[in-house]
Length: 414
Ligand code: HGY
Ligand code: MN
Ligand code: MN
Ligand code: MN
Image (cartoon, rainbow, N blue to C red; front, side):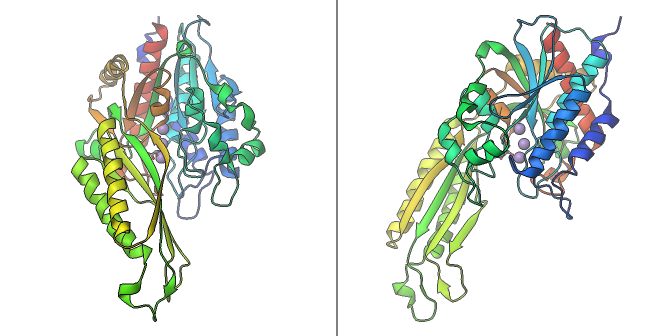
């Protein structure tokens, strides 16, 4: 009688699928740009659906465009065990962020099916719509829709080319009026376990392949606009200037200081100014702020302190300021039961159990509204991610996928 926990995934097959998906949206520098619901990502979705079908899964797309591959269990009424991630990327990102979780999930369900492992609970692997939020400015769209957090206001969000999420969804065959119907009841999913690259430096520093996330940072995204008066660079005396850019410089240093004081992180990832000519004092600056913290209270305090600091800086200079909160999600804690199961799976695979807090956001944050969550992290070389040099070794991907395999087996046979 086969011991279900003695099986291993087919790591060559997993690596081949990572390489194939990594071609879709790739540029000459090796960066990958597969923004949500663009042609590149839609091509990636076709690839994922064909892989789910080849694995013998029942494939469906829900009202939010989430792709779901199902391996039916012996008890159709039992709440399911789900895994998943995303294949949309940032601009010039890497080929493991999100993709590893989706492809390893398919490989794990395929292995369970091929090995004839009996499981009461059905298993699902989900490829979520728009986890990154880079194209429209709000992330976790598919996982939020599935966990009951959809907001129709997001349909009006526009991308850099002026296309609204609504029209892009229509073009992609996702009807904008029924996205909220993707939400599922708490009773329908027993647990959600995501496999994701670490995207940081901790596991490499420890020299270990995988980590068990105890918590995931919450985030708050702001769009800041500072307006002054565009003027001639030569004829405007320094004391008469209403220069939004020098005010912004003071604001950025204040933001950095506040993040350090609160033990959080803050990133200014985008900054645009107008009109943008060498001999014209800018009239307007627009920049983004990405704030993160492990504790909800400290995240809120950071945001409040930053709002106060930015306001104080413009008041001295009679400039105008607008701060719009464009996206946010609370920090989440992993389920102890799932962490214990992940730890047992690490032991089965002779891997050290390393517990750590995850600074990167994942669909697991949204799924925590619906069910118990767990997250396995796989070592990232040099901690690089959201970058063409993002890399995890075949051995580390295999280790993470086997930990996911044994965890899903244990959770689905009970
Ligand atoms: O931003 C993040 O942490 C994730 O990549 N969405
Ligand atoms: Mn990412
Ligand atoms: Mn990701
Ligand atoms: Mn994720």
